[in-house]
Length: 261
Length: 210
Image 1 (cartoon, helix red, strand yellow):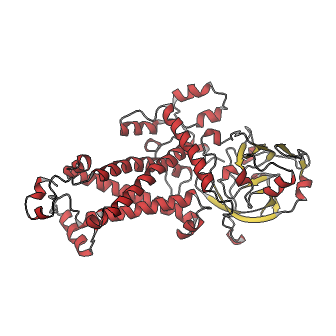
Image 2: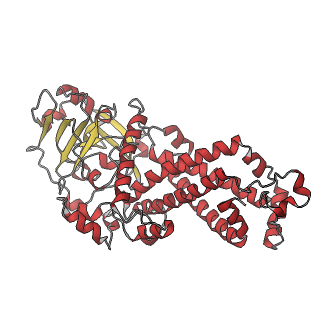
Image 3: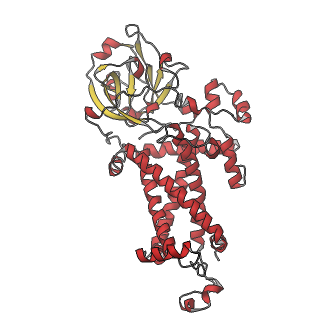
C-alpha cells in the first residue's frame, strides 16, 4: 500500500533496536515499535527531564492504552449501530490498503480454501466456501474508517458473525474471537466478544454485490463497522474462540487493541 | 493585586495581597500548556499518516515517531487535556472568573483596544483586568478548545457518538474542523507567547501569581 510504509522511520533509535533485537519479533515489528525517535528529543528539551527516551515512557503509554481499552469497552453500546448510507455514496474506487502492495496480496484458490474453526466451540468442523455461501446473508453500506484518518464508504454482504457463532455453538461468554489470515508475515487480530456479537459484524463474502475481490480479502473478510479498518481482517483462514489475549499484527506494534469507533 | 494596582482608583475593589492569577488558574494553565503541546505534536504525526492538505509536518517537530506511537501519546495526553479542561471550565464558571474577567466584550471596545495595541498605547498597568482584545482572544480560544475536544471525540467514537459527528456535518468535515481548531490554537499560541514575552510581568504573574 505505501501510506504507512512511507512513514517508516529513517533513523531508528539504536538503543531500542538493540533491546528489541533480543525479542523474537519479526524485523518489521522491531522497526516500527513505539520508538523514542528524534522528535522525542524535542520533548526532553521542553520538559527538561528524560521522560521519553526511556522504556518507562513506553511502559506508561502501554498502560494508558490498556486503560483506554477498558474505557472503550465500557463506552461500547452493543445496540449502537454504525450509520448506513445510500449506495450512491459508495466510494469509488474503494481504496486497497495494506502493509504490502496489491501484487503481494494473498492469492487464494476458493475451491481449496477452508475456514478453520477452533477453540471454545461445540463444532470444530472446517467450512468450505460453498457451505458458507449457503448461509443467510445481509448487505450493509457503511463507512470504513482507517487508523490513518481517511475513510471510505463501501458495500459489504455476508453472514452476521453472531449467527455463525451461534451455529457452531461458540461459547459467547469467552473474551475474544481471534482471526488468523493469509497475508504475508501472518496477519492476525483479536476481536472482543461483544464486538463480535454486534449485529453489524459480518463474515463478508461480497463487495458491491460481487464476489469479494482479491484486493478486499477473498475469500472472506470480517467486516466490523464499529472498529477501525485494521480490526477488519481480510483473507481469513481461521477463527478461534478464546479467553486468551493472543495479540495481533498491528496491536503488537502499538495500535490500541480495542480501537472501536 | 500588585502595589501598582492598589495605588489609586482601583484600591476600593482590590483585595490587598491577592494574586493576579490565583493558584488554581496557574496550575490548570501550565498543565494545559503541557497537555496541549503533547496533543499538537502527536496530532501532527497522526495527520502525516493521511494528510488533509498538500503538506506534512517535519518529523523533527512531531511526537511519537510513527502513527502508532503518536496515537499512544495522543490518547494518553487527551485525558490530561480533558480532565484539566473540565476543571478549568467548572472553576471558571463557579468562581465567576469567566464572567468577571471575560465579560463584557463589545465591538467598540475591541476596536479601540486593537488600535491602542497596534500603536503601543495599550496600558498593562493592571494585569488583573483584561483589555477587550484579551477578552476576545481568551473567550475565543476557550470556545476553540471546546470545539477541538468535541470534534476529536467525534473522530475517536464516530459510531457511539454519531449524533456528534452529524453535528459537525459528517466524519470528513469533523477532521477539517479538528485541524482548523489546531491551527487556530497554534496561531493563538504564537501571539500569546509573543505578547507574554513583550510584557514579562504577565508571565511572572502566571508563574508566581503576582
